[in-house]
Length: 333
Image 1 (tube, helix red, strand yellow):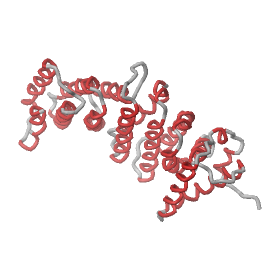
Image 2: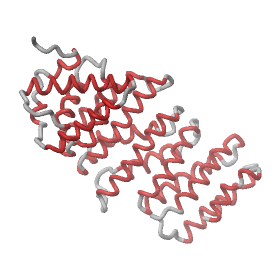
Image 3: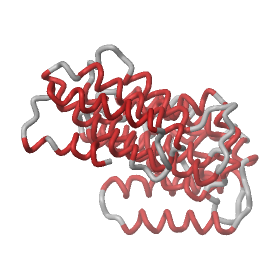
Image 4: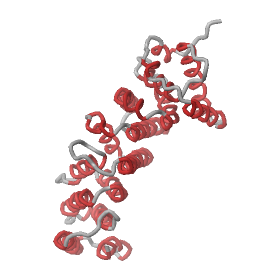
């Protein structure tokens, strides 16, 4: 009899973009075999569900396009991208989980051509799940969405960073760094760091005419840290951790921009007793950044300015012996 497919796949029927995204490459077929094998070896309910969905998509692509061979990861990517745009979003979180397994082996060219529409669909899933992710299922779904955004950005071609959509996507990840949900915050932070690492690896010379992950990061931190009142100290602390870790992938000038932004945190909080934790984290951040291998040598004026500021606020911190290590680490740096 005629094969009946799940309703969420019906949006693919009249969409011929799947065919236009096909690249007949055996290694991409093999990559999908590995995805299927990995899912079949995991016996948890989530993996079983993904395997059922993947099998349905596989059969659907083969039927619609009369393929004799198994679909490639490029075809799977295109099929999932089209399905995510459909009106039936009942399986969207699972489709994004599956997409994260497929994306690493998809052609960068095809990802670049379809990134914007996939990103729009991912944003909708996050909005459906809610920004405040308290339940385990919502945390998992939002985390998978952020991971997907990160992978998409890693694979897009360099010239696409000049588009507003790329800026928005990276800024979107930064918004979740320092989230009250530690799992979500860590996923977002790892995605940001991976993009910084990948972009610096691919692009030894940065074209300053358009955005790149490093410039977006430094501008975002400056915006948060320059606020007169840091109402969300949890977000600020998360960004301080990110600033420290990201310095390994930034240029010397970008590192100094971060240092100056962090100094603003110390300026605004040094006289507030309740802000000691934030000030200490800020001092540790400055210490970590200026020890980055990318900073060859600070000028005497720069070092003197930062040092005087640090020493000047110590009397206001009411430090105990267990917490003195932060300013000591800075002075040693």
